[in-house]
Length: 177
Image (cartoon, rainbow, N blue to C red; front, top):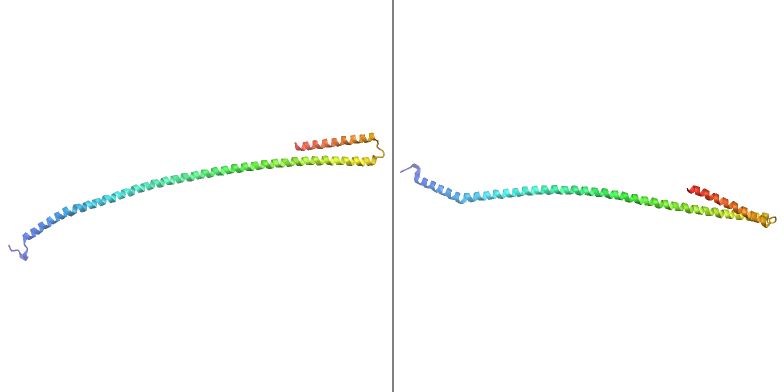
């Protein structure tokens, strides 16, 4: 058979058979392993994506837990601060109260001491005045006074002095009450 352009059908069929064998062999040798490799790669990336998603969820849970703990810690700090402020206010009020009590007792003691000094000074002054009066009277009456008259004058002076002291104490007692 003589085909123009020197084309032999048998050779074409053999080439086609060789191509089919080559394609089948390559698909048997290469297609399945490449497909298996691609499937393993897909599974690997799906696993990584799943792990990333789980890690993200865990991070979100931990972040929410951290925020809750932070919020409760802030509330606790605020409560402790308020308690400390209240305790400080109580302590300062107590300290001020004690200071006022001490000041009042010091003032009271000072007033008592001043009153005692005043009474002592008044008594001393009355005694001195009495002595001066007696001395002056004695000088004036030294020539004309008899011992009986002298005794009567002393008795009268003592009675007047006692009355004066009693009156000043009554006045002082009324002021103290």
